[in-house]
View (cartoon, rainbow, N blue to C red):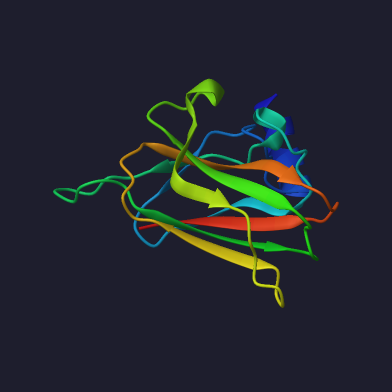
Length: 143
């Protein structure tokens, strides 16, 4: 069964919406959590990106990270929430303070967020709303 899953993974790319174990991010590591996808807006798993495990290094306080995203065209009115959790469970994720993304660069349809005051073990993105049916590619980078 594991071979079949790995074969499908190689053919169709990385599974999304929490289908795979979280990738662990050290400082500078980048994980693509949505790859040219059109997630269904909402509040649970179908609206969530692949989650990542954040690494806390030595004496450094917290687990900072950044988020970069790009829509394929104008998304219209939208909200992408950056969520964190101490445990990797859908109902444990909460939107971190000031981490509601609602605007993009009007030319390139891109956004960036630095989550520097975070102390969490896991992070993901949640497509809360989106009026236009466009794709999104998003990455989380360990801080």
